[in-house]
Amino acid sequence: MPVSAADVQFVRELLQRRAAIQVDETKEYLIEMRLEQLAREVGIASIPDLVRQARGQKTIETRIVEAMTTHETSFFRDLHPFNLLKKEVLPQLVAARQTTRSLTIWSAACSSGQEAYSLSMLILENFPDLARWPVRIIGTDISEQIVAKAREGKFRQLDVNRGLPATLLVKYFEKIGAEWQLKPIVRSLVDFRQMNLLDTWNMPRPDIVFMRNVLIYFDQITKKNILVKLRGLIPKDGALFLGAAETATTIDDKWDRFANENATYYRVRP
Amino acid sequence: MRALVVDDSRATRTILKRALTAQGFEVFEAGDGRQALEELAKTGPVDLALVDWNMPVMTGYELIREVRARKDMDAMAIMMVTTESEATQVQKALEAGANEYVMKPFTDAVLKEKLILLGLA
Image 1 (cartoon, chains in turn purple, cyan):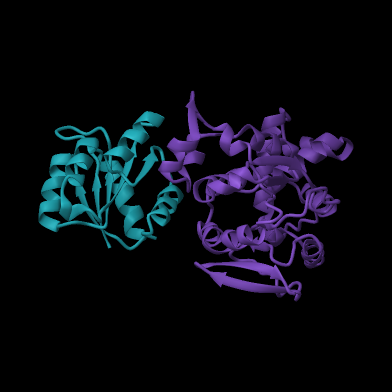
Image 2: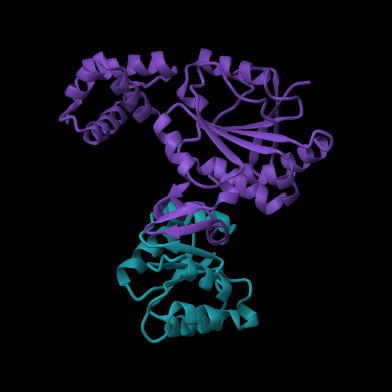
């Protein structure tokens, strides 16, 4: 299905307006690929027809934004940040929160939920005492559709094959038909909600933020705005995890960088 | 690092060998559990064994039990790579001594992530 220059331009402007996401020329193939898939899903014959309908219908417009912003994820993706969380960040925070005994972790742009559920399993496995605290893991994503999917906690074989230790698969999942369903104990720590990072952040103050491979999609001003907003939200002893190729300090110089276990996290400079 | 690929399908062995070679492994092959033990007798313990479940002569499950009964193979990481995809079978393989489990079909990314979990990539 070919996509015209005018349609590409429409999608680029739409993504910039609704999600502050920039799609440069090298990523035009992605527009074609994702729109082709979406057209099939919603039963529209071609990409030009899809774009024509999006120009008049908010629902189709939203579906295009959702289709373009859904990103790849896997359980314990990149592993190292989870090791750093387990060995350094969480022990420090658990010690520091002995009086308040509550902890909130935010998995931003959580997609189908693997990161949020990995955090839940990591806590259950390594910090069983935390199960008695109010521990909240909040997963947010711009796509209502993907949030609904994440909430179900059902995964395909391909998903549980990826990055998930087999010991955790047998302990925390139940096979139902061809799918693997996460057990209630893992799901009970996680709460998913739809949220656009450009809108008001309607959520409690997170002690730990996983916002990995998210900022890369935004323009410089939006990246800075998000980091400034985060600074006002994360406590001084909290931690921000970004993607391996991302950095906070060059965008907003009010963060300190900490590296260990082949991973990095950031804290608001005191 | 050295790896042994045990699968009765030559095509699967080729795929696994290519993926492991790309990760820097020297790869040996065997077509069933018995051949794997013969190969290990020649090579000595390897760092990693990728083992199919259903094979003629000696199954992957029997091979794992055999290998884990031997002290000299203690440090060898074993990953089952099989079409068997029931939770009970994953559990059974882990109890027999497998360290990781991959359900076929799989991609190179799946293998890479499992190698990372095992500290081998």
